[in-house]
Image 1 (spheres, protein in one colour):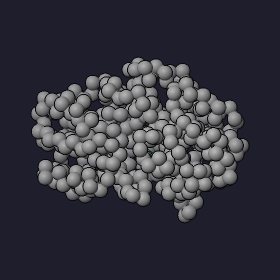
Image 2 (cartoon, rainbow, N blue to C red):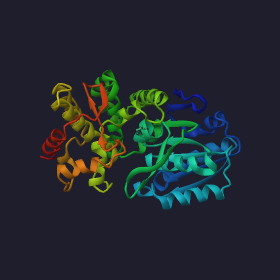
Image 3 (cartoon, rainbow, N blue to C red):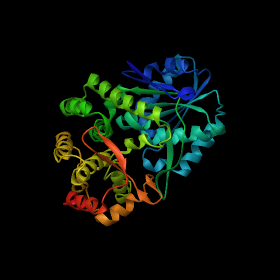
Length: 367
Ligand code: GLY
């Protein structure tokens, strides 16, 4: 078991990573001061797989618990399900001393975190992420949100959890596609700030995908370590935290273009976005062509999407995709900011990117 600390003063918390943590959840919740009531929100798929084990662990530790199961899928991150969740929490008489648990992937974590942020002006919550994407990214750092018809994650708040329990055993229930999509976010950490970690992934990622538990623990730990350090320095994304959005400006445009459907999962979009960001970086002379070639080769080795032509169905043209990028939250005073790289592990934020080059790279990637 590995424990990391997100150093945020009065809002500091632990990320615990290991096998079989669901069964030990009662002890960990007691450690963060949970005493009486724990309410769990999950989705129907995760509920079927993991809710029974969590409820048994809570019962064994003497907690009273209640659970709400929402439909699985991105559509749940919406006002109707949000308002149903908040009303349910109020009906459960959740108070500031109680703990709300988000059991699931990024959708549940983001929605429950936002509900906890606004309920009685803020109640404590614990993230128990069950997808790789949630374990290495969305459960850590306190970004909570629901989607609007104007775009993804546009309504939300920063609200840090009191604890993150990343049970590596839960990753065993993911489909190969969901695991690999989460892997897009793991790879992102190497690309943005740790060339050695990217090198380790080039060697070891096939074992991760094949189920090697020790390597999975190491990859989740290294990703969370990097995220925790960045969040501790820049909690509300005034600067450095934006690096965590490597690949995301492209990804958000592609997700919008594919209607947030399963034509493109978020982590797959991040993988394609990272490949595009490195290609643009090389074209504008920031890094050598060897870097995007390495990214591309690694994605191919893992069987991940890496080009626009790998996304099934029609996509809009490059001009429209660039327009969709303009909806991104990283637009400041009308200027589109990109995360570019001076090499593997050396990402930085810039608005100084020739959109003509972006357009050419998108067109080539589309084939
Ligand atoms: N997922 C990016 C961040 O938490 O800042």
